[in-house]
Amino acid sequence: MTATTDTVRVDLGQRSYDVRIGAGLLARAGEEIGPLLRRRRVAVLTDTTVAGLHLEALRAGLGGIETVALALPPGEATKGWAEFSRAVDWLLEQKVERRDVVVALGGGVIGDLAGFAAAVLRRGVRFVQIPTTLLAQVDSSVGGKTGINSVHGKNLIGAFHQPSLVLADTSVLETLPARDFLSGYGEVVKYGLLGDARFFDWLEATGPSLAAGDRTARQHAVRRSVEMKARIVERDETEEGDRALLNLGHTFCHALETATGYSGRLLHGEGVAVGCALAFELSQRLGLCSQEAPSRVRAHLRAMGMKVDLADIPGELPGAEALMALMAQDKKVMDGRLRFILARAIGEAFVATDVPGEVVLGLLRDALAGR
Image (tube, rainbow, N blue to C red; front, side):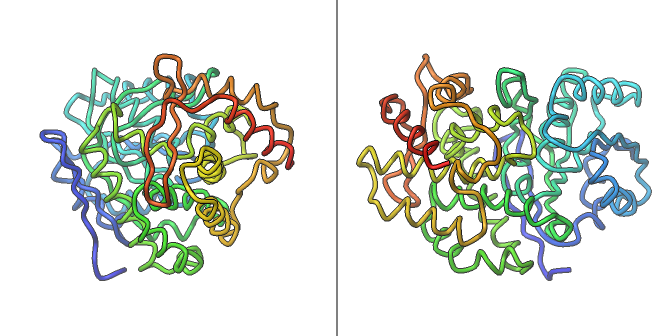
């Protein structure tokens, strides 16, 4: 176990909570979660893959706290009405009460679905996030966005419901397949690109050892990412302004995820990486940033072995006009206008609502032509 556990406070008044970051937190789950409980019982939502790897460790860490668990199928397809209804009905069968705690043990899919279930169950019960993927640890477990997907697009059904605690056990990242770890790294890079050029510099230097398993580097990357997200969420909990910056790369990403059917062809963090590369290219075409910036972004993603171009996505993709139509369904559309997160430089992102559609179309046509 590493010598230290970091704590990042998300300061939201009465809804404030701690994000605990470090190796060995599963083994101390009872100590961490116990103070939240009015009766020594928790209901865990997880998936079958994570359950096989970590559920028994969590049970052991919870000690004398009674634990009931439901394991849903793994994968993005779970984040829909069918498995959501199953989860809510199961929680009701378990007689989960208003004062109880639901535990989300898994990646972003489970965290989003379990958080939404907790938000609507008996008009709101508390929940604890125990994210088991890098992507969930640095992004989806923090900030209270919960929800499920629709046939019309990603995360279109949901609620803001803050967790009571987040336990990011960095040692569980060692069980992740390399592709899943790199998918999460797409969100880590995003934080440097949107608001911390020095963090991006550090990632350029340290990324390979971080991917190779350096625990100290991983803990620092998770902590810095969570710090940045926490400060943004504190300023703008419900995404009226600054929080939109966290969507750097996501307008492109969500359209590509919808186009690929939320399948294994494109993992979320891979879509974010491709989307960030496209957002910087768009910024350069609009004269907002130098040519060096998108080149640096692409070079780093390539050096990490990540997807960068539309050509890296296997299978057929729709044409540029169809991808534009998918973007128009995104939740970030305001008054019928697409919002893009653009950049003046690495670490200097901003929200833009006046991007000419023809420039975006030209970018997409060129990107598709490269396939």
